[in-house]
Image 1: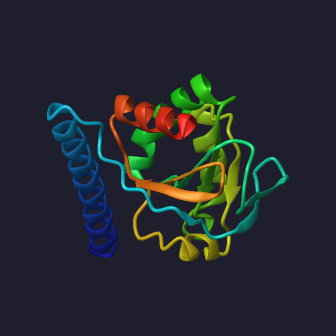
Image 2: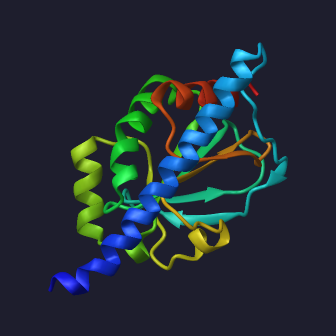
Length: 182
């Protein structure tokens, strides 16, 4: 039994290390820029995000693509993901604080997850933002998701502004503030 779990555990460990490394590098880059007197570096893409429509846990259909009333954070995650577990309270906090000024669509990569686990995760963390179900995995493929969590910051014109992974809470809040102001 233990030998069968070893590859899964190694893959999970590698994904966790990659997510932590990427978050650390983004944080270091932003801190270095701020220490030099500049704003945190922001990689601006200015390309439209791929359009999709997914059903939420609430039964509603959610559409992404094109101009929107508010900027958007699209967060891809899974209930079994350690960094997603770490990130959930920060997403909740930032949404509770700024939810009227931006939308947050939390896309569960359901093809890689169990619906009961998704519901339990959402209830445990008291997540009030829409939880979308990518049951076929096509949206994750369209967005080229290699590791979860991965988030996309989208401006009001529907353009990708930045791709982020787990960030410290203060850095996440700064990114959301910049998205709202942009």
